[in-house]
Image (cartoon, rainbow, N blue to C red; front, top):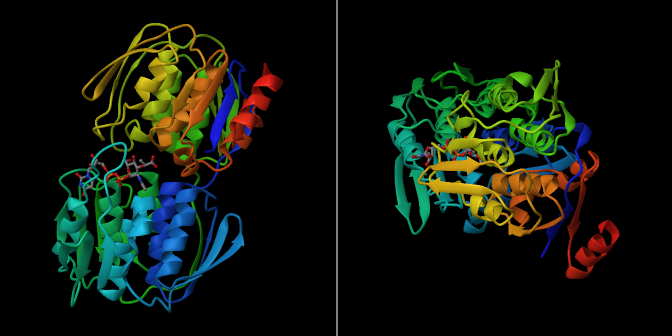
Amino acid sequence: MEQYIIRGGNPLAGEVEISGAKNAALGILAAAIMTDDTVLIENLPDVRDINVLLEAMESIGVRVERITRHAVMMNSENIGEVSVDYDYIKRIRASYYLIGALLGKYKKAEVPLPGGCNIGSRPIDLHIKGFRALGAKVDIRNGFIVAQADHLRGSHIFLDTVSVGATINIMMAASMAEGYTIIENCAREPHVVDVANFLNSMGANIKGAGTDVIRIRGVQKLHRTEYSVIPDQIEAGTFMFAAAATKGDITVKNVIPKHLEATTAKLLEIGCEVEEFDNAVRVVASKRLCSTNVKTLPYPGYPTDMQPQIGVALALAKGTSIVTESIFENRFKYMDELTRMGAVVRVEGNTAIITGVEKLSGARVSAPDLRAGAALVIAGLAADGITTIDDIVYIQRGYELFDEKLRSLGAEIEMVHSEKEAQKFRLRCG
Ligand code: EPZ
């Protein structure tokens, strides 16, 4: 079983290139099947979630050609069926984006109902509400979502909860519905905007993405396009907090600083220096961090996907901090692991009260989910001694070459495949 093994204590310093945004790329890949023309997508992150979605698309007849490690050419004129195999949705929830895309283009779709995951129950009732509002008949049968429509007609849809997935899925289906659709209370994340821009580059007519009201005039056909995915602001934020927690000096390159505003604001609050450039941000942490309070919110609020990263940094800060997780109901599991490294934390419902300590100590911990796993790597980099992290498959879902990028910043981290390899690392690093 692969593990990361880390000898902590080195301040991380240097520059790191940020990959394409996983959560934008997942929606864009699904939307790409809505044309029969060939589509070129660049700046894809080479991560497990993307590669599994590409496999799922090939399984229904999409022709996928890898041009480079980060670019694919796709053609969907020969999609044979609209039923996605359970094995794919078990491995990646975002396969459910294929419902909106298939329903929009073929007026039918059959995709396994995604299970919950480690951070919460993850319902998709709002997705289904939107598809039904557009005129689709949607049933849950034998664990599948079966959606069908003679015609999709524009509608006025109000999302009860701000939902990235529902906004993107409904936007895709509506882009090929007859007439005009208004979606209210939309998610405003950069990846929602990126999917809308991608659809518009194929000839869709979508306005207002990035605000809470998206207006769509349906079109009959979508055409070829070449498109480059935006940089991943969560990967960037993760490295920014690695600088904060290790008293380092890291410049994240190939980013859009505007997408990082909430993260930057918190880093300044806890005592880091942050310098913004056109497509880079530099974070310097020269002294012990200060405590603060943070509440996760939909964009442009502080991102839930950055909650574990700030939780780790605050575990080392001077004073007591309060972290409130308002999006998901089970996103503090990493705090148990952090406590084993010496953190002083009390979790009460969706709030964590963190009393900062001077130092964490290395331990063997397990990654409970993608972002918490990355945060535990940050904890290991900051801690004294050796930290071993199990279940790193979660981390590999969303971080490309994570250990390699960290080593380029001076981290002593390796991916090991056996106890023997781990022993070698310990002997080498003392
Ligand atoms: C996306 O998940 C991201 N995943 C998540 O990132 C991210 O944490 C989340 O948005 C919030 O920003 C992808 O983009 C692939 P939501 P999504 O629908 O779309 C409730 C990562 O680390 N809800 O915005 O599933 C839901 O329970 C992952 O990369 C409903 O009630 O999240 C939650 O409380 C983790 N009914 C809230 O909305 C619905 O039909 C926000 O969820 C849909 C959602």
